[in-house]
Length: 331
Image 1 (cartoon, helix red, strand yellow):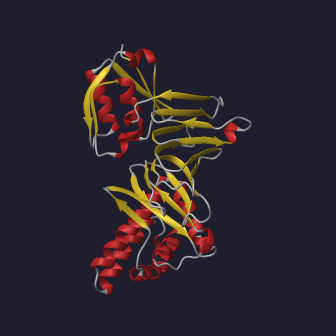
Image 2: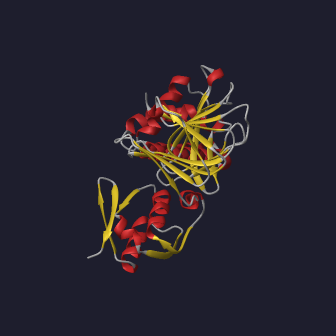
Image 3: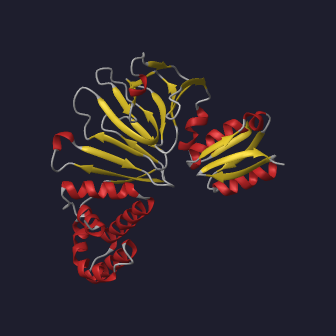
């Protein structure tokens, strides 16, 4: 299948269920695909609202073709008319919420009884979404949340890859489940965070308020774990070890806000916040973080700018190794 054609057909609501599944898989393959899809949507939105004649539309669609696949000029000229369907599209399930970007794709054509929706965020994207039961979910960068269209049946179930903060609407008759591929989290109504990036060794669950029950494959043959507010549960995929800690939950949820503020904050808490804010894994020795406190604010600064500031104001150096950021004592 050709991604250009599928995007065009999806925007015009003429894509088949198989084509929608192909588009979803294509979006998940790499970040560049997500950027191309967003560009297609941006131009569709602009042209649908502002362009009034076919000449302007043809010019805009030519720009879209150039941005989506600059290496296939002959094929672009041959398939350009297909993009005229974009103009009559009534809507698209693409969400822009509170300044952050994400998008939703639903496959509902072939099996309407088991509709599956997908919420996705890119490298620089964070999103706030309303689920069918009025529960709220915040998705951090590079995350995917999958769920059935209307939470049909006796339970509400979602599958997460990445990181999300849930604010679940209370409904004891319909428990809410978060699946992470072997680890299940059950709740009736509460606020909690789950971190499940597939490329990282550790899965985390942090309870802000209420209570959650953790079970699933990792607990085979053992009792489920009940979490209480202010507790962090971790599972290491490699060692199969679990751990439970008391934490300040604000450090795990601050990434949903517009800025980070540190006021004589211990480096260990700074690291936790920066990991969530920039979507990176940071490692530092206990000796380094024990006696270092820092004060600064992060708004739109890049991670490199933050690291430069830290190294100038504290005895901290850093290096990257296999996509992991290591902090160590400056010599």
